[in-house]
Image (cartoon, rainbow, N blue to C red; front, side):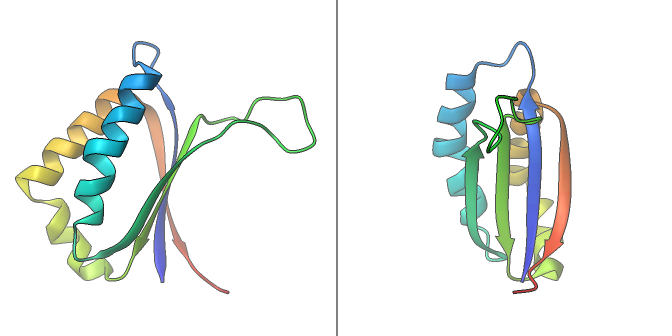
Length: 103
């Protein structure tokens, strides 16, 4: 199974409360509704284990993908383009990593 891992910080002008509300009410339900997606979780990254340092990112999204071939066309819909644009208004240079489960 493949996963998309997205690491990001919010833009300086973005509200944490507004992003988290949008993630819960728009982003997660919309993406989870795609046929190519099995699950979607958003994590707030709060601390570095065993350290007083802050994590390098504020958030991590993990999207479990059941079909990469189906995902592409699903991301091209007007709805997903709108959601992606809204995400880009919150996220400051997000990093999108494709991962493959090994165990």
